[in-house]
Amino acid sequence: MSEKFSIQLMLHSNAADEALEQFVTLQERCAISNVILTDTTGITAHSANYRTITLQNGAGSQTYYSWSTKTGDQGALAAGTAANMIDPGSATSNPEFEAGAAFKIRSAASGSGKSQQTSVTIECERLRKY
Image 1 (tube, rainbow, N blue to C red):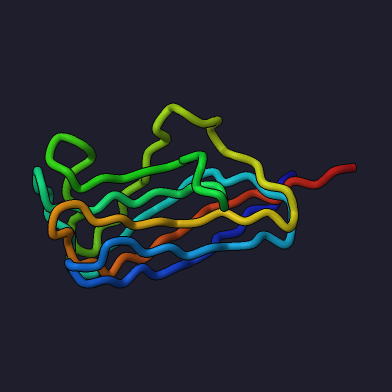
Image 2: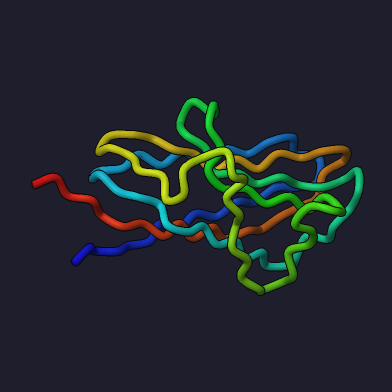
C-alpha cells in the first residue's frame, strides 16, 4: 500500500507581476498524482490579460500540469472553488521525482495579467525502492 501526502503553496501577485516561481525540493522519491488550484477572489477569463499556472521540472524544460485563464483554454478560476490542473499531454501522467529532485510552480502573466491569491495543493504518493 502506498502512502499519500500533500504539499501546500500560496501564490500571491498583483496584475502587473510578470511571473512567480516557487520551488519544492523533495526529501523522498514520489509521484505527483494531482494538482489543485483554489483562488481566494477568483481569476476571470480574458483573451489577452490572463494567467498561466504550470507545474514544471526544476529546469522549467518539462511541463507536467497546467491551467490557463485565457478565454478558450481552461478559463476562469471561480472564487473559493477547487479546480484540478490538467495534464497537457506532453508529459507522463503522475510524474515521478527522485529524492533530492526539485520541481516548481510557475505563474506567468500575459498582457496586463490578473491578480491572484491562489492556494496550490500538490497531491503526492511516496514511492519506495525495495
